Image (cartoon, rainbow, N blue to C red; front, side, top):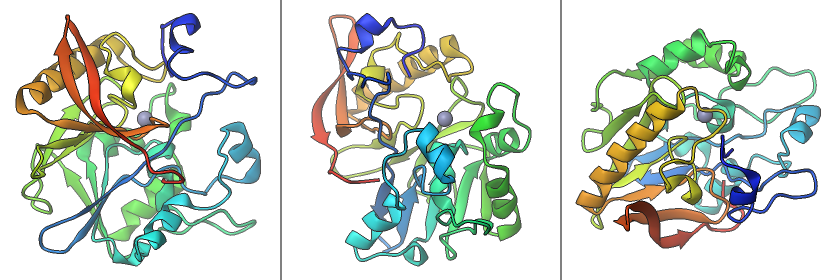
Length: 267
Ligand SMILES: [Zn+2]
């Protein structure tokens, strides 16, 4: 998760367990639009893995945590009007699928939603490189394609969510989409895998999964400079402790401040 940063540096930020694993979230963001529509940004890893793979990837929750979190808000997957996906890696889009059942193929959840996906990210999911092929779920791509409810995003705006803006980044995977939500307290950008958590706000820190780390750092610098100027905030999908923070540039470094802690047991 920390690319070329040595362990002596990163273990101070997120201490690993005895199997050298670190705790990570797969957090989704639910936005209620002024017109009453419910918009979900990403769906987390979900529960589609068979038990062997669930153990390999260290997925600790047996159930579909996102569906449980929606239920806590008196919502089901049928109530969601739009699902925005930053990209289609399994830890961001796996929650679109029904929980694993022996001998049964998965089905697509959120039957009333439009699925908004970047056109380049969609191309990548259909024709992955050997380097990231294992990060996609072929059955999910087929189900999305057949749903008739897939919307491909080509620019930085979508008619589905006219007040939102969509930043683009190619360093983690080609066509990563970072949705920006206008809120009264300032814009919030869902940072996806460009900045998966607070430690990655520091410019040189990248992930081993990133396809083009130098490009990612340049993109991160542009986004962070823009957000500092506009008093924007970042939403973190993988940070185990922090869901949201403001960003600042002091002493030549970007860092997070005004952190909002993650609710426990959230997806
Ligand atoms: Zn990813």
